[in-house]
Image (cartoon, rainbow, N blue to C red; front, side, top):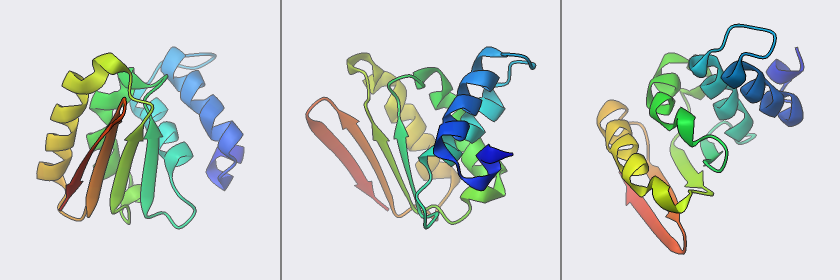
Length: 120
């Protein structure tokens, strides 16, 4: 499958397919998995996650990072394209990530012009 071979376009399409149940059962877990694979750097150490079209997957991200072995080497997570109304949703997820996986070195959330960075 193209998504498993790190084809970014295919991975992004798989997010949509699983998120909306196009031709398959809807699964936010698998939509989140493919969002994370799409967001994963080539060295597998950083996730740069756009929340522009995936804010509804935000709450699933911490569990997906822990559940799937593909993300075991991730040390930095960066949220980009945060909608203005996402602040109240991003902070609890950041806290959950801090509490759940001690191997993160850095969590970054962009909100408008402000950057919230947590060095762990």
